Structures are given as structure tokens and as C-alpha cells.
Image 1: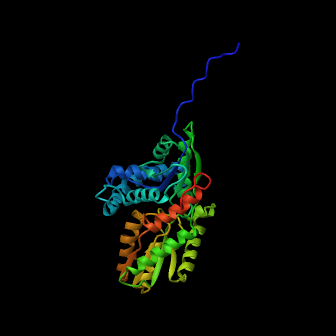
Image 2: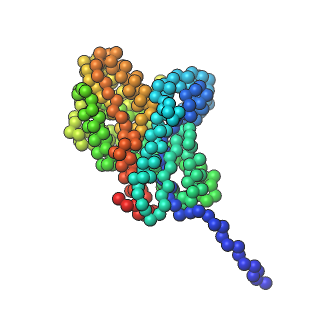
Image 3: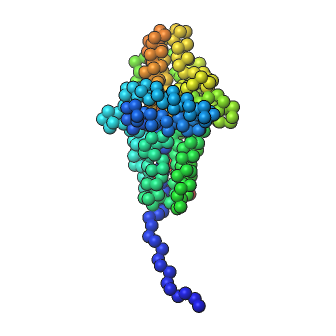
Length: 347
């Protein structure tokens, strides 16, 4: 006998919106020892970042690095901390990028919600993916804010997104924006930003360094395309600006530990140029979408000191694209391209 009991109506759920999640590297919540320790432990425990034997690395990390490095890095962060908001500049800028992108996207035939997260620290990727889903986003575009792809940056963002989705019964449909290292809009923005930065200086640099975050050389040997993409970015930037390899040089910064990293090293190059008699030097950091400890302290403070102590006279760290109009236009171009077929955005 057929059961004639009527089926209950389906539950009412919010859906149909598209979420755009901008993701940057990460930030500590504060500069004190324990906040720094939590942040560094999460960062340096990532197997994409440190591909060492896990037992050996656990001992080094927990018995040595996390005893000494939090205090030292906390002092570095103190020097650049946004005291007004009580947060790192990276957090301030990434929030600004998300807010300005939302305003710049304009009207669309489908609601688009822009949010932001950090791979390490807060707000976390898991928290913001959950928030976007709760807001009715049945489709999600994740945008790693790294122009050049590396397993230790772009891939680990995907790892964390996938980890969160694996725990969700009702998953949003997912897209991940690719690296944009050769995008004409990105290259043009870098060129204009550099031209504006140089025009504002009281001196003319003899040499400009394009400094990218380094990775161990072994990572490239294993197949990471990062180095090639950095080289291509600088090649295109030189062509756009009409600069030679001698005027616009490529270097890599932020090496960590005893193994060989990508060369030439930024700090060693800065010291060598000063020793060779170069008096005026500028540095740009095209691999960073937002200024952070590596640009504001390592480049603008530490490497400036190397240069001047070595005999150099004038040193300038040109700001990243950040949440400037140029910078947000680059992100908008990436987002609009990747949302095709999902939404129709007014251009």
C-alpha cells in the first residue's frame, strides 16, 4: 500500500551568492612572546614550508627555534606594528584590498561577497570559508595573493581550503585563481608603481633590485615553478620599462637555515654593490602583494643598514602595490576573469 503522507517542504536555505576569498600569508595577533610563538609554530610546522624529516624538524623547531625566535621576531614586528589598529600592516592592507575590491567590482547579476583570510594566524581560512557558506555562497573563488606560484605559498592555501571543505557536508563549488606573474595588468601596475616611486625620490638610483622571497634550491629541483615565474616577471618588467639586466637586477631574500636557497641573495648583493662603489640603490618587491615584515623591516631597515654601512649613501624601498588603485585593479582583473560563467560583472 502506497504511503500517501505528503513530503515535508525542503528546508529554506540561503544560497546562490558567490564568495571571493582573498588569502595572504599570515600574521601574529600581537608582538608578545606567546603570540609570536603560536604564529611561528603554525607557520613553521607546515610541511609545505619546511620539507625536512619530521622528527628531526620537530626537535629543532620546538627545542631551539620556538625558544629563541619569538622574542627576536616580536621586536621586529614592534618596529612596523600598526599601533592605531593594534595589528600588523599585512592585516591592515589585506582588509583594505578586500574592501576596495568589493567596491570596485560594482553591480552584478549575482550577489558577490568579498572576504579575506590569512593562511597562518587570524582570520583563518576555515573561519572565513564557513562564514561565506553561512552567508549563502554556493560558489567560492579563492584568490591566493601570490603573483608567482610556489608550493610553500599558493599550494598550502589550497591545502587549507580543501581541509575545510572535506569537513563540510554542503560544500560550495570551488575555483582557485592561478598565479598572475605575467598578466599584462600586473606588469603594467608594477611599472607604474616603480615609476611613481622613483619620481618621488630625491636621488636617482644607479641600480634597482627586484627582490623576491626565496625558497630552498631543492624545492626548484623537485619541480616547483617559482624561480621561472620570478624570472619571467622581471623579464617582462624590464621590457616594459626599457631597463637592462644591469639596471634592474633579480635577487632573492629571507633565506632561513643552513641549506642553499635561490640565488643571488638580496643581502649579499646589497653588500656587494656598496663595496663596488654604488651610492644610490632602490629595491622593489614584486612577489609581495602587500607590505609586511619582509619588506618593511628586512628590506627597508635591515638591508638599508647593510648598504649604508658598506659605503652606500641613498637607499629606497619602493612600497608594494598594496591596496592602491593600481594594486586593487590587478586583483580585480584576476577576479573578474575567474568569475566568468558564474557572474556578469559591470566593467
